[in-house]
Image (spheres, rainbow, N blue to C red):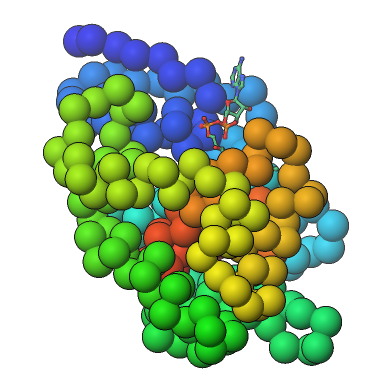
Length: 218
Ligand SMILES: Cc1cc2nc3c(=O)[nH]c(=O)nc-3n(C[C@H](O)[C@H](O)[C@H](O)COP(=O)(O)OP(=O)(O)OC[C@H]3O[C@@H](n4cnc5c(N)ncnc54)[C@H](O)[C@@H]3O)c2cc1C
């Protein structure tokens, strides 16, 4: 029987192990740490009963991933009521809600149409787009026009995206704020990296947030 050894039990190692095992290969996963999960682990590190994410914590792309959805297990994603919030000095917040309709109510009225114009075309064809985005970097696109529409937006930083698209303070703050706390390479691709995540870690696609939620694993 063909055998395979996977070094590391992070999400990529485990995914590879699943694919290989499903193909009938005898798989062994080696892990250096005492727990599996790599940078996606959660553990009680401080107080009993309080579990902390040891690395990553926000997974819109995992939630949207065709691979994860194809698995014969139910992943217990935690889906928060609002997917992220950007607090403002006046005590209110911009909220990324589960629907575009609700999200725009937390923006200045001058930006509601612009937000829809930016996000709706992407969420409308979300499944096709996510298939492109999650394919290997060098592949022949099955939805080239969609990818061409998304690509230029994905390359813009939050500031560059927000300035021409929005006039109001709320949307601009929501898209830009965390640029300041990021190192230069991380400032790019805000629509694709979900830069609005308040803790600055976040998720890979804005559309994944907008269309599918930003679940955290249990
Ligand atoms: C602080 C932090 C925050 C993050 N936040 C997010 C987020 O919010 N959302 C998101 O989508 N992504 C986030 N990420 C990225 C995400 O965690 C990684 O993309 C993902 O964990 C990569 O998975 P992986 O399987 O490739 O590697 P890892 O998760 O790094 O797993 C590698 C595994 O290999 C093991 N290993 C290494 N060397 C050996 C060896 N020689 N022998 C045996 N085992 C070995 C390690 O112990 C580890 O368990 C974050 C990452 C970090 C560090």
